[in-house]
Image 1 (cartoon, rainbow, N blue to C red):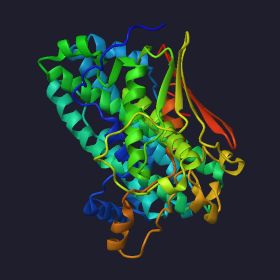
Image 2: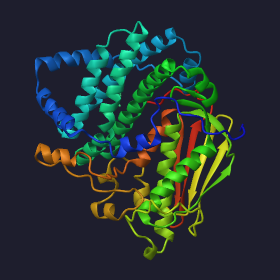
Image 3: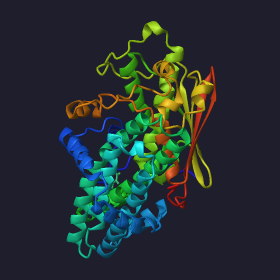
Image 4: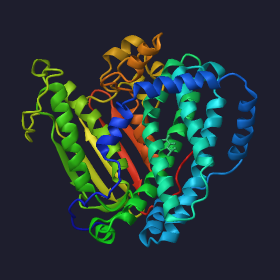
Length: 446
Ligand code: COI
């Protein structure tokens, strides 16, 4: 079940790093001009032009087509014995699949209550989706490697343009939460985000395989690093936990100005498995961050905490008097299980019942939000009046969207895994992550 610890494989050319991933989710930098021009375009497009009616008939044709899901294993097998022909074949799969997946989500936005569609942030996402849909559906069939390169360049541009989607969606939906029931918000958001993740995986895999193909050291890299596109076939549990523990400890030390709790590893630490490392890193990052916050706020004497003191220059000491966070790894026959266990005081009932919700206003009343440490809430700014003010409000610095846990669930469930949280209010919390070991489950897009 487990194999000896391996060194961290070298990164392939175009994988997204965990740092990029977190930044794209939390602080995606919007080019102000793009943002306002997108909003202006949306304003122009709305209204009931005959063109809009025609476009919708095209959309319907795509919505009526089923999505062709894949498994992690297929992603690996396909990329393993790559030939030009296969690369072109997978390029055409991505080219035809992306517009279908986008069309389904555009249709979902259209079916939201009218008032929600008028929110400028939701409208901005809608507009981005339409323009990507149009670009991708009109892209001619890929016949040569040059066509494939051109396709990858176009898709790279779209990936970048869509970095704003998560913060805009999350803020937009929160601004509208008075108009839709929590259950509907969550159904909509989970579908939107799973589908987004799936589109980005398909796109990033095609780009990474193509870049590898053009790289003269390609075969060597595959052999030594175990990467096939964005998938690492040798993710090592210990390496990943240690890397994320270091990141979250540094983050906590910067935030609280004290030595953060240690992270101790237990169980089958040398387990290796095939996965997209950034996905598991993101999940563990969110869990460890919450655990550290909880432990520090419960156990560190208030006088020792100096909030927002930057301590970059202090080396991250291992020894802490705070109760450690225990990460246990189990390598089962079909799944890898990871438990993150803390003594951070647990989660109160009124928060626990909404931890998977994307709707902050349904989660807590305003006064509770400001005092809640667990969900990391900060008020999402309302859209201001002028375009300049809107631009300013677009991505506030250090914005906490309060969606770390639901997003981790999206990541875990995408390849058929599961994320569960059990808590003892007053003592601590256990989070259980289950991810596929065999990679044989279809993408979960429901
Ligand atoms: C997204 O990131 O939302 C996408 O749909 C990306 C895809 C158009 C390549």
